[in-house]
Image 1 (tube, rainbow over the protein chains, first blue to last red):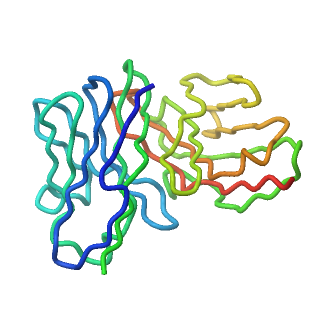
Image 2 (image 1 turned 180 degrees about the horizontal axis):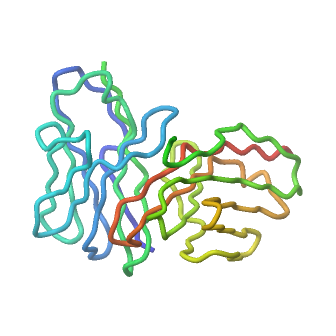
Length: 113
Length: 112
């Protein structure tokens, strides 16, 4: 597997502001994903972030709202822009190890007031 | 019809019981099947991963896949209070190359 860390672990933000979430992996990985876990809901894929290419967004998620960077094989950021209370959620990154399945970070708990 | 159906529970059983957790899915393209365990305020932890119909065993855990019925199960033997968590089924069609589609999760409580 891989050791994955996320920063911040939690935050409380005001509506209209933006928050950048960091995901750091202890080994080089090609594929990285970002998910959202809203209260009482399934984990939902936001986008796929591969190093060296633009992020690919799922239906319902757009780059202007959730810009993603992937500057190298161990790091990625997800920004939640112009936040509203509906963005209150847990945001998780995951990585693919040895071409198999995905391992998840601990998550970032976001509350928007 | 939702792509994945999973009973949210809570499911409460006594310590030592055999637990059965289930998911149904509708997408025939799903070829990879996973179970994750998620403790409160933690990220999901991979428990089982398989891509074929039949059973796969790992310690006290057995994953069962029936592709013809589009039904997967996770069995936990000799359940322990430490097994109390939310269990998520997950699917994709491309293995490591694709994002995952999750069930809502079943909240499991093992009573000492």
